[in-house]
Every structure is written in C-alpha cells, then in structure tokens.
Amino acid sequence: MSADAIRLDGKVAIVTGGAGGIGAATARLMTARGAHVAIADINGEAANALAGELPGAIAIEMNLEDESAVVDMIARTVSHYGRLDVLHNNAALLGPDVARADGDVETMDTALWDRTYAVNVRGTMIACRAALPHLRATRGNIVNTVSNLALQGHIIQAAYSSSKAAVIQLTRAIAASHGKAGVRCNAVAPGMTLTPALKEAFPPLLCQTVEGETLRDQLGEPDDIAQAVAFLASDAARNVTGHVLVADGGGASHVPGLPGFRAFLSGDHA
Image (tube, rainbow, N blue to C red):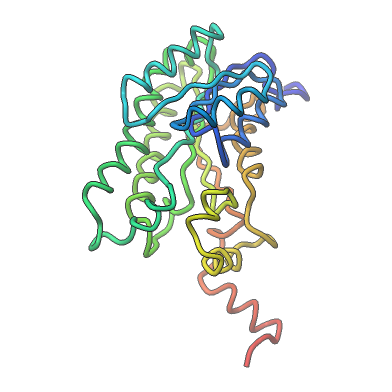
C-alpha cells in the first residue's frame, strides 16, 4: 500500500449535512486531501458559502425527507464530476428544539419519532440506494455518521439513538451485500462533539458531565470526527468494512462510575 493511501486525490465525495459542524469539517478535510466535494445540506445558503471557500466544491440544497431531492443529489453530483467515490451520510435531525423534545418513550411524540426515522434512517437508505450503482463502478465506499448513543442506553433522545442503531444495522447490511462488488460501508460513532448546534442545544452542566466520562481532557471537536471519516473513506482503510468506529474520547469504553472512582483515588472526596 502506498504511503499516500490516506489521500483522496481525484475522488469525488458527497457530504450530507455538509454546511456545518462535523459535515463542514469533513468537507474541508477531504478537500485538503485532494477530493472534490459536493456539500449537500438543507441550508442552501450555508452550503453555497462553504462551497465558495473550497476548490472544486459544489453546493446542493437537499432535504432528506424528500426522496426525489435525495436521488437528485446523487444524480447532480455524478453529472457534474462524472463519478462518485464516497458517500458520507452525515445529516440528521438534531436541532436544539428537536434535541429538547426527544426524551423517553413514555413521553415521545409520534410525529417526532416518525420524522426522526424519515430523516435519519429512510433518507440515509435512499441515498445509499441511489449511490450504490455509481460506487460499484469506482469501487467506492459509504461512511455513515451514527452515535455512541446507538450503543448504550440513556434517559434522553430515544428516537435519535434508536434511529442511529438502525443505521448501524443498515451499514452492516450494505457491507455484507455489496462487499464482493468492491463497495465498503462503515460507520463513525461520535460522542458529544463541540459543534455550534450542540453548544446551543445542551447546557454547560450537561456538557461537563459528559466530559467527565471521557478519557481525554476535553470533548471532541468536529475535526476529530472528520479525521475518522476521512480515514475510512480512504484506501488506507481498504480492509475495513461493516465496522463501527467509535470516536467518543473513550466515553463508551469503561465501567459506569469511573469519574467517581477517579475522584476517590485522587483523594478528592469528603
């Protein structure tokens, strides 16, 4: 394998939810590594602004709830660049108002549940379905953004976490069904990441609580997740498929109560 296998020179990538947060960091990193990037986002103005900063990038305004718009996103990208090598399904329904409303199942609003699945699962499936013929032609790959909440139980975000668990299984199904045709499919599971949307949705005390559970000295930044995505999208990860790469600062890797034990052993207790 070439020492430059981590590069993305000449590859064409779509990043959904690409206008901000993890998506924007990924679009910038992929461009820096030589890819041409289609930035797809429900916020067309923000997508156009970012595309204007990145050489060779284009912007596509797209709503994952609209099947025809998702299909058109793939078609427009292939028409513009002549190929498709990477589909990064990063967009999700996770604005501040949605995050606050998404609680436990007993209080779940059915419309919120249905919309979460329409965006996070159905929209992702449609994008994969439309992209697969083109990815077979280039022996390309799919990287789905999921969440460490899809791997653990919590008292909040029942709709979001279960939808992301569904995307994990979709990831494995695509990897199993299309691997022999040269298509890889993986997922990245971030923990709480310091995006602008997160800072708006979650009060500082909750962020500090999660930070205390991580094994790093801080919560992850969008670029930390972008690095994981870009690795999986590259030829350096050619032997990795059907995998969920957990990038949560070690938060899901330890026994419950670790912060309490840390405080006890350091003598920081009454």
